[in-house]
Image 1: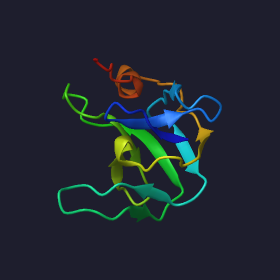
Image 2 (image 1 turned 45 degrees about the vertical axis):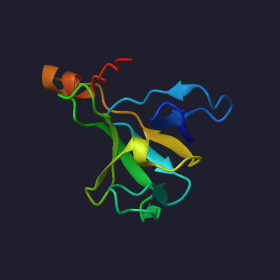
Image 3 (image 1 turned 90 degrees about the vertical axis):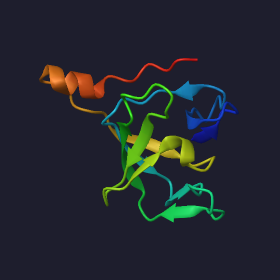
Image 4 (image 1 turned 180 degrees about the vertical axis):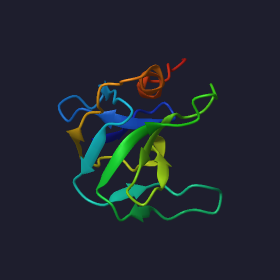
Length: 117
């Protein structure tokens, strides 16, 4: 489930223990229980956005920036949305874990960015 952890960020948590954050490897394919709802981005947004997709691939973005959110979802239309912008209480299931890396570059792409704080 998507969850607001009360720390200025959202992420995935287990259904049984909503305070337990779930780490996801980059490249993991996810299926949501419905169309994905996101919070509005920007100063003028006030209305929740619906992304008309129920599958996404977990990615990490802004890896070179320390003070930035890194966890994101890439949807079939190519759109990438930060995980912290997803509305709460959306169910998701892992469809497929990423393949084992065959090269150092693939291993680096799958490595999670360490969170400071």
